[in-house]
Image 1 (cartoon, one colour):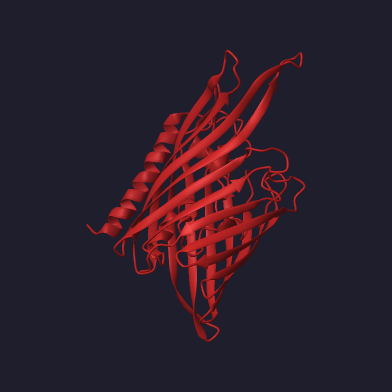
Image 2 (cartoon, one colour):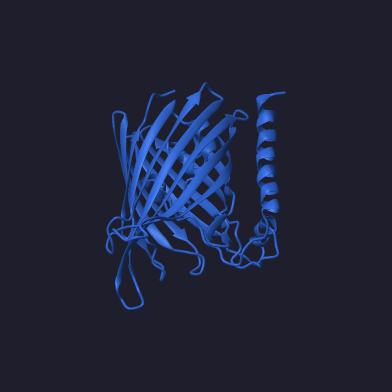
Length: 360
């Protein structure tokens, strides 16, 4: 049996096992909360294009967006470090850090891994009599590993397994200091990527299409007796790489994003039924449009916009830039909110430093 057939069987088995676990896990709850760490665009490049990443050209941060892209990366391996501040104008100590990397094995296989840490900062506690009771800090982290395989000349597939944890710690020298609550969760992604040359404008361009179903996994017990679903999501994206000339490349991209968790659902339905309901009267589709301009693969400019309805989330413009010096690359992005509901990342910069590795 060929490796391609084995990969397809493994993907369906992986999805089936998760679906079976969901069905056995029990009923969905009325209140949906999530692990914030799995909902944030961690890297400055994708953030600079409106949180786009399903079909953009591969890099070390593809672990977050679409791990199957690693097969078509120009470099045999790569590593990236990313930093994102939270609510920097309101409080200190709210930040997110990420390290992500991959390595190719021949022309048909690649593995990737990442580790993410999110600090939500300190919260002051007071009694009913306004007596200070100390502080509580909440932190989250996630680690994951992926395997991707070439399924054909122009297509690849990938699978990702992830462990996430959220915990709260009571600080200061109070009698109840220590870990107040620690919750673990497991999830997985299934992704596909298709890329091929397309002749247009009297020259050869490149069209890429990517899709990923992410965060299929266990439920999270947010409070005692109250469980929440993981932020299950489906994303479909397309990118068109157009070489204006040998040194100038313009890459417009478009992503459609669909939450697989309905806004409201009763306790007597399974999680699989909840996923189905998300396509009916549940959450709306959101979309992002962006573009990246590259000069000689040394300097990049980026622009993007993310749109959603008010009750679905946030709307914002993003701007970004990148510079390459030898084997190092520095990316930066800035987010400008245009929604009445201000995102916690509004008016903040994100930075990503990447080591590019060796060319194929």
